[in-house]
Amino acid sequence: MTSGVEQIRQKMLEIYQKDEELHRIDTNEIVRELEPLFVAQGYRAHREGEPQRIMIQHDSGVGDFINLSPSIREIRRAYPDAYITLVVYSRGRDLAATCPYADQMIVNPRLADWRNPMAMFRWNIDFVQKLLPMHYDICFNFVSWGSAVMLSYLCGAARRIGFSAETGGCGGAFPYAALEVFLTDRVPRKARGTHSVYSYLSLIEPIIGHAVNDCQTEVWFLSQEKERWQKKLQEQVPPPPRTGVPVRWMAVVLGGTDGRKQWPVASYVELLQLIREKETDVDVRFLVIGGPENRNDGDHLAAGLPEHVVWNIAGSMNYRESVAALSCCSCYIGNDTGLMHAAAAVGLPVLTPNCYAAELPMTERSNPPAYYPFGVPAVIVLPAHLMPECQRADAVMGCAQPGHPHCICQIPPALMLKGYCILKEMIREKQSGTILFYETEDMHQEKVTVMKRLSGLFPEKGLQW
Image (cartoon, rainbow, N blue to C red; front, side):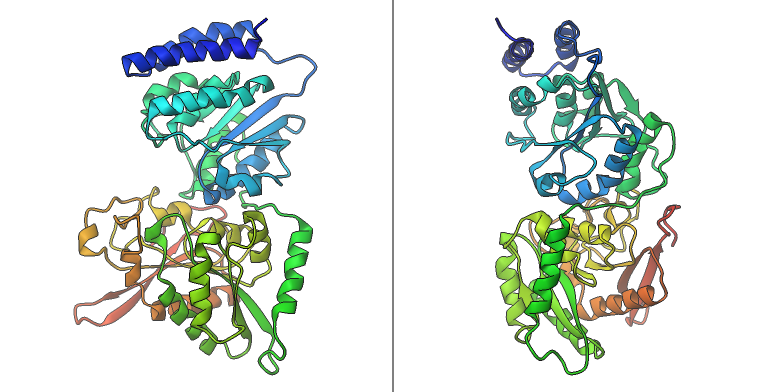
C-alpha cells in the first residue's frame, strides 16, 4: 500500500510534469490539487498527544542567519513546549547545529538553479520527503527566495506565515504575488528600525501578539571551543612580547562571498602597519580568520608584516570554530561578511570598509542601514563617490561590479586608520551605535572627513544625519 507521503509526492510529480509541458507554474492549481490530499492525510489538524511542531525556514547567508537569531529565540519563548526544526541553507549549517532554541536542524542545499522556477519546483518535490513525515503545525518563512515559500506549502505545514506581497518580495524567478496563495498568514513588513533584525522580528510580532524588546543577536558555539582558542592565543605569543606591554589580538577578516565588498589585501597590510605604529601601549597581533579561499590572502598579509605579528588560521576550521576564535579577540577589522555579524553578536567593536558610496541616497533597504554591525560600537568607512562606470549602480548595494573589488578600492588605509581612532574613542566614551565615515573634497579641493551617525540601537529610530 502506498503511504500518505508517497501519495502526496506522486500528485506533486503529476502537477510538475503537466506544468513542465505547458512551460508555466500555476500556483493556484497546485493548491487546488494538493489541498484535498493534505486534508485527507491529516495535515490540516494537530495530531493529538504530540507536541506542536514548528518549522523555521531561512535560506540565505550566515550574516542573515545571525540577524535572525532574536526571532528564533523569541519563537522558542512563545512556544516553549514545541518541537522546533530549523531548515537552513548550507552556509548556516555549523551555527544552526548548536542552536539552543531548536530541536532539529535540516540543511536545504538548494542545489537546483534558483533562477529556474521549474528546476526549483522539482528540487522541492524531492526535498519535501524529509519534511512531510514531521506534520508541521506552523512554518515561519524568513526567506529570500520565492522557491522557499513554495516549499513551505509542499511540506504540508498547516499554518504558513510570511510577508505580504506589498511589503515582502523574494529573490529568484518566482513572482512573489503568485506565491501568496501558499501562505495562510500574510504579514505586512512594519519594522520599527532599518536593520534586518527588526525586519525579521516584524514577521513574528503580530503572531505572538507583542513587541519584542530583547533584540540582541546571538551566535552559538561550544564553551570548550572558546577555551581551546584562549589557550592557543596565549601559547602563540613567542617570548618575549614587546617589553612591558600586554599582547592584544585583533581579528582580521579578508574574505566575503561578494567580490565588491573585499578591500584589497595590500591596503590591509598598510592599515595594520599603521595600527601597530599607533598602539604603543599594547603589543598588537592579528588573527586572520576565514575560509580556505582566504588562506593565500592571509599568507600575503602575514608576509607584509613582522614575524609573529600575524597568525593566519583561515581555512583551518569550520565556521562555528572560527566564531569561537573570533570571540577571543578584542575587536574586528575586516570586510562586510557573516563573520562581521558574528563579531557583533559576541560584542566585539567593528571597523569595516564598505563599497556603498556616500553620495548614494540612504534608504532602509540600503546596505549600511539594513546590515550594520548590530548592538556594538562600529565604524563603517565608505568611498565618497561611485566610480564613473558605476553611476547606474542600484541603491541597495552601491557598487555595480559584484565580481571584484571596485568602488571600495577608493578607501585609503589612512582613512581607515582615522576610522579606527574614532572607534577607540567610541569605546572609551562607552558609545554604542554605528558611524558612517568618509572623506570628500570641498570647493578648494581640500580633503574633508565626514561622520554620519546611524541612530542608537535600542530602540532604533531610523537614520539621523
